[in-house]
Length: 217
Image (cartoon, rainbow, N blue to C red; front, side, top):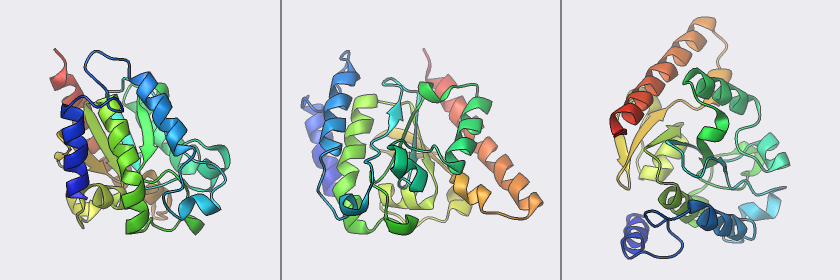
């Protein structure tokens, strides 16, 4: 996986057409990438999906949110984070003073794993190049990684989200802040635990906003 990242970094430095060039319009590259995703047969996940879910949002976002994979609702409509977890994510984005269409939302894998299981390594390996190309085209200031499955598959690590959340990490030179997946909060039953998790996510998002502000000219 590290070799793959280095290869894509090399092509980016060489100005490969599928990556965003400084001063260029990322929309053309993203449109071509979406066409590729919508025809993808790289792994078994395409066999059981209803719709591919490439991702959506601004083509010049300050923030890219990355989850692990589409759920049932997302698979039904071909859009990321529109179920209950997505509704909570929308509220978080709004609390940050942003609109959903001002950020970009995507997943590590672009097809729903059966029964919402975690994506397998070979599935991630097949799909991660799409995410790398999305990030290269979008050039966000910050990546927000939603949940440990997405984080560990992106970084090749085995972090516990309870310990790593809110820390400033890096992915291919882009600042990355991990936080809980919205579904993690929704699955909790105890009101105090829900409140604590929500507050911790908000602490993490304040760090994201500070990074965005410090990066402005």
